[in-house]
Length: 95
Image 1 (cartoon, rainbow, N blue to C red):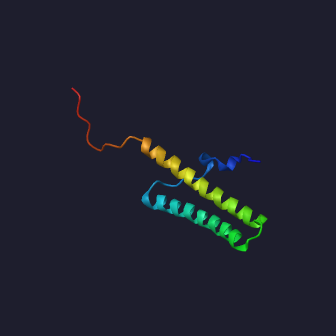
Image 2: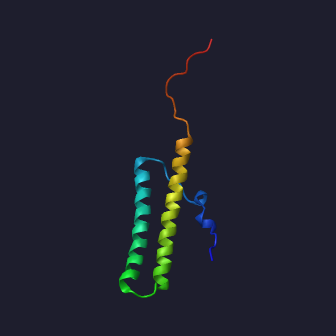
């Protein structure tokens, strides 16, 4: 059964400053979480046994972490893309 968890809402997650360093850091966090999930699934494959409860929970948490990070990035980049660029030129005087 699929249960909704209010903690999965990206709007409830902490924000980071949109900068190249912040973006790369968040991408790294998502990649690390996916790597952790891949590790547990690989263990399952090599052991040739049923997926343990521990591995299942760890994989689920890692995938949730990756999803939350990616959702936050997508939302922030969407906001950034929708923001009109700042024109630092002086406005033309109106007479």
